[in-house]
Length: 119
Image (cartoon, rainbow, N blue to C red; front, side):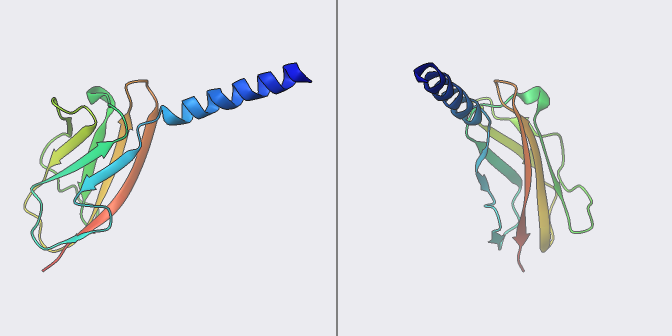
Protein backbone atom coordinates (compact mmCIF):
# COMPACT_ATOMS: atom_id res chain seq x y z
CA UNK A 1 0.00 0.00 0.00
CA UNK A 2 2.80 2.40 0.94
CA UNK A 3 4.56 1.59 -2.35
CA UNK A 4 1.39 2.39 -4.35
CA UNK A 5 1.01 5.74 -2.55
CA UNK A 6 4.64 6.62 -3.28
CA UNK A 7 4.25 5.75 -6.97
CA UNK A 8 1.01 7.75 -7.14
CA UNK A 9 2.67 10.78 -5.56
CA UNK A 10 5.59 10.58 -7.99
CA UNK A 11 3.24 10.36 -10.97
CA UNK A 12 1.27 13.34 -9.73
CA UNK A 13 4.46 15.38 -9.27
CA UNK A 14 5.54 14.41 -12.79
CA UNK A 15 2.27 15.56 -14.31
CA UNK A 16 2.46 18.90 -12.48
CA UNK A 17 5.98 19.45 -13.80
CA UNK A 18 4.93 18.59 -17.33
CA UNK A 19 1.96 20.97 -17.16
CA UNK A 20 4.22 23.82 -16.09
CA UNK A 21 6.56 23.10 -19.01
CA UNK A 22 4.26 24.63 -21.65
CA UNK A 23 4.65 28.22 -22.83
CA UNK A 24 1.27 29.84 -22.15
CA UNK A 25 0.25 33.34 -23.19
CA UNK A 26 0.94 35.62 -20.24
CA UNK A 27 -0.17 38.96 -21.68
CA UNK A 28 -0.34 40.85 -24.96
CA UNK A 29 -0.27 44.34 -26.49
CA UNK A 30 -2.93 45.17 -27.53
CA UNK A 31 -4.52 43.35 -24.63
CA UNK A 32 -6.85 40.42 -25.18
CA UNK A 33 -10.33 41.77 -25.94
CA UNK A 34 -9.20 45.42 -25.79
CA UNK A 35 -10.48 48.29 -27.88
CA UNK A 36 -7.70 50.71 -28.77
CA UNK A 37 -8.26 54.15 -30.26
CA UNK A 38 -4.94 54.35 -32.12
CA UNK A 39 -4.10 51.45 -34.41
CA UNK A 40 -1.04 49.56 -33.14
CA UNK A 41 2.04 49.25 -35.35
CA UNK A 42 2.81 45.79 -33.97
CA UNK A 43 1.38 43.04 -31.82
CA UNK A 44 3.46 41.76 -28.90
CA UNK A 45 2.81 38.49 -27.08
CA UNK A 46 4.58 37.51 -23.87
CA UNK A 47 4.67 33.86 -22.85
CA UNK A 48 5.29 32.09 -19.55
CA UNK A 49 8.63 30.70 -20.76
CA UNK A 50 11.15 31.12 -23.58
CA UNK A 51 10.02 30.10 -27.05
CA UNK A 52 11.80 28.82 -30.16
CA UNK A 53 12.04 31.22 -33.11
CA UNK A 54 12.08 28.53 -35.78
CA UNK A 55 8.73 27.02 -34.78
CA UNK A 56 6.76 29.97 -33.35
CA UNK A 57 4.38 32.14 -35.37
CA UNK A 58 1.75 34.82 -34.97
CA UNK A 59 -0.57 36.19 -37.64
CA UNK A 60 -3.17 38.94 -37.44
CA UNK A 61 -6.31 38.79 -39.55
CA UNK A 62 -9.07 41.30 -40.21
CA UNK A 63 -12.81 40.54 -40.01
CA UNK A 64 -12.74 39.10 -43.56
CA UNK A 65 -9.84 36.78 -42.71
CA UNK A 66 -7.19 38.69 -44.66
CA UNK A 67 -3.73 38.76 -43.08
CA UNK A 68 -2.76 42.29 -41.96
CA UNK A 69 0.70 41.68 -40.53
CA UNK A 70 3.64 42.89 -42.63
CA UNK A 71 6.18 40.16 -42.18
CA UNK A 72 7.00 36.99 -40.35
CA UNK A 73 6.77 37.01 -36.59
CA UNK A 74 9.98 37.09 -34.59
CA UNK A 75 11.11 36.24 -31.10
CA UNK A 76 12.71 39.24 -29.40
CA UNK A 77 16.48 38.74 -29.04
CA UNK A 78 16.59 40.47 -25.64
CA UNK A 79 13.52 38.69 -24.23
CA UNK A 80 12.93 35.19 -25.60
CA UNK A 81 9.47 35.08 -23.99
CA UNK A 82 8.31 37.88 -26.34
CA UNK A 83 6.91 37.18 -29.82
CA UNK A 84 6.19 40.20 -32.02
CA UNK A 85 4.88 40.98 -35.48
CA UNK A 86 4.63 44.29 -37.39
CA UNK A 87 1.27 45.41 -38.77
CA UNK A 88 0.01 47.25 -41.82
CA UNK A 89 -1.98 50.45 -41.19
CA UNK A 90 -5.20 49.21 -39.60
CA UNK A 91 -8.58 50.87 -40.17
CA UNK A 92 -11.21 50.64 -37.42
CA UNK A 93 -12.52 47.12 -36.95
CA UNK A 94 -12.02 43.76 -35.26
CA UNK A 95 -8.73 41.86 -35.59
CA UNK A 96 -7.92 38.29 -34.64
CA UNK A 97 -4.45 37.34 -33.42
CA UNK A 98 -3.63 33.67 -34.05
CA UNK A 99 -0.49 32.26 -32.43
CA UNK A 100 1.33 28.97 -32.23
CA UNK A 101 4.52 28.60 -30.22
CA UNK A 102 6.99 25.91 -29.34
CA UNK A 103 8.66 26.34 -25.98
CA UNK A 104 12.35 25.64 -25.50
CA UNK A 105 11.40 22.23 -24.08
CA UNK A 106 9.54 21.42 -27.37
CA UNK A 107 5.93 21.64 -26.09
CA UNK A 108 3.45 23.25 -28.50
CA UNK A 109 0.69 25.65 -27.45
CA UNK A 110 -1.61 27.71 -29.63
CA UNK A 111 -4.47 30.10 -29.32
CA UNK A 112 -6.16 33.21 -30.58
CA UNK A 113 -7.82 36.36 -29.34
CA UNK A 114 -9.55 39.43 -30.70
CA UNK A 115 -8.83 43.13 -30.26
CA UNK A 116 -10.62 46.10 -31.79
CA UNK A 117 -9.44 49.35 -33.29
CA UNK A 118 -12.02 52.03 -32.50
CA UNK A 119 -12.89 55.19 -34.41
